[in-house]
Amino acid sequence: AQSVTQLDSHVSVSEGTPVLLRCNYSSSYSPSLFWYVQHPNKGLQLLLKYTSAATLVKGINGFEAEFKKSETSFHLTKPSAHMSDAAEYFCVVSDGSSNTGKLIFGQGTTLQVKP
Amino acid sequence: NAGVTQTPKFRVLKTGQSMTLLCAQDMNHEYMYWYRQDPGMGLRLIHYSVGEGTTAKGEVPDGYNVSRLKKQNFLLGLESAAPSQTSVYFCASSYSNLDQPQHFGDGTRLSIL
Image (cartoon, each protein chain N blue to C red):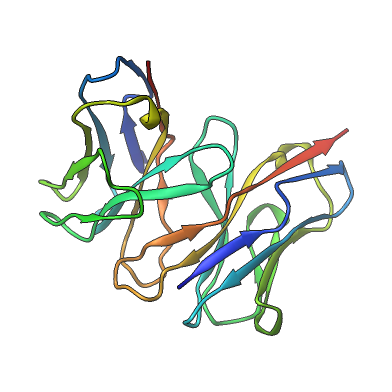
């Protein structure tokens, strides 16, 4: 069965410093992995996705993630945090065992950006 | 350029009341999903649909029913609301099951007193 674990429930960084949000996954299949962002009182927006092409995936707003099969990880990074990056981030794996497009969500990581 | 629209945005119910949440998408997507979001638990799938006229249970279906009579609409019903159903509900849609990203509405905040 597929599962995803976000290793930090809360991350705090200063504006202009690097961001690292950690995610480990478990999958019986070659997984498709996503990062979504949720700003307060809003729905989820796709940041980036990995679907077995390049292992380093670039997304919107300067974010990128690296798929490491040996470590079963898909960590999200950004070189320099901006105040507007403060939000909830979700690591997501697709349920490859079914034909339904179902997604399995991590518990979320709240990113705080300090001035 | 509406995308996924959820109605209503907020609602307060009393225990035992019923209501229907509406999700509408204008992207001609085949797949639609209803999730609930609770603190510290991410999003959990309630029900989903892989096409007009079809529905299936997700991870937490008890106490909810759904219908997909038209391709663009996906309705979530609570027949007898309970305080445990206080949550934020999100609808999402996707073009196919082939690892396409899901597009989300802005959510419905539901409180059951």
